[in-house]
Length: 241
Image (tube, rainbow, N blue to C red; front, side, top):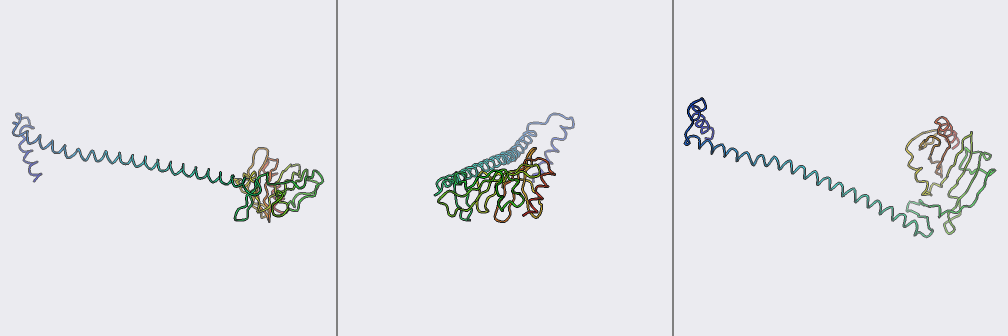
C-alpha cells in the first residue's frame, strides 16, 4: 500500500521535476506531509543510537567506579591485616615474638638475646660447613628471650672472609623468621649449584643470596659484584651441604 502511494506521488511530480511548471499546493502538500512523517520516524531511531552510545559510556564509568572501590577495599584490608600482625607481635607474651599455628615463630630483634660473641678464632657453627675456623671474623649466636621454650640457638650471625671475598650470613632455624630478613625471601633471580636452589640479587659491589638446607635458612651477603666469583662461591656452598 505504502509503495503504491510512493509511485503515484512520483508520477504526479515527474512533470514538474523535468522542467515543467511549479506543482499546485494540492500536489505538494501530501508530499510535504509524507516527508515530515518519514523524518518523525527517523528521529527516534537516531535518538536510540545516541542513547546506546551514552549508555555504553555510563556502563564503562560504573565499571571503573566498581574497580576503584574493590582496589581501595583490598588496600584497606591489607593495611588492617599488617596492623593486626604488628599489634599481636607487640602484645604477645614475649614482646617482639609471635608464634603462628603452623609452628613458625616470627621475631624482631627485641625478642632475641645474644648468647655468644666471638671475634677471630671462633669455632665455626656446624651449619656452615663451607667456612673454615680461620676464615671467621666474627660469630654471634642468639636465642629467644628468657621465658621462651628452650634455650637453643635460633639465629647465627657470622662474618667471614674466604678467597679474598668478605661475607656476612644470618642463619635462621627453619621454624624461626627474623622480620628484618624478610627481603632475602623475595630475591628475584634463580641459580642452582650442587643440588641447592639459590635465590639472589646482584648489584655492582655485592650480591644477596637466600637458600635453605636441612633445618636452616641462610641469608647471605657477599661483597662482590663479579658473576664468576659469585658462582664459584655458590658452587662451594652447594657442594658442602
